[in-house]
Image (tube, rainbow, N blue to C red; front, side, top):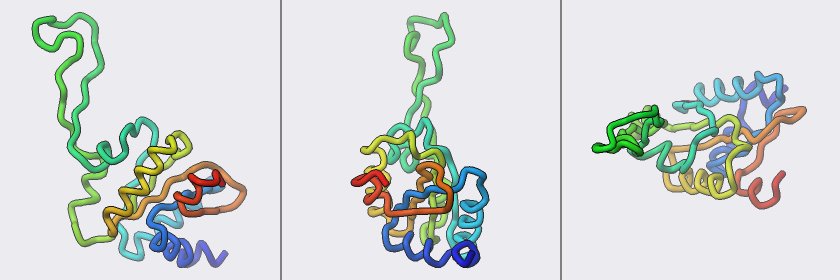
Length: 156
């Protein structure tokens, strides 16, 4: 398996497109090997789930507010029904500590994302040329990938 030994084609495609849709075997292993190869090529990697992502740009890259869950009876006089907004640092903030280093954001369970959320991920990778994004879109018998933009247009 020369693909898994070097990861050159994956690396080249990642640089060419900036954002890839990956289909990996369900038994796992191949995506971990690719991540290891990318780390060896100088990428700082961050893995997270796409579930509950909401607005990808805000959730991953910007300071944003969340409200805690409603816990029953609360003081009506001060934010009773809604709760106080808490400011949360971006999920991928640790990726951006080193501005010059190449960054790879790997999203698992990407099949739950809508077309507009996937398009937002493409825009994020185009805006920051040091950030590359890989979205796992489902399973396959063998490891496959394609540009996320091409995936959106013709649904693999």
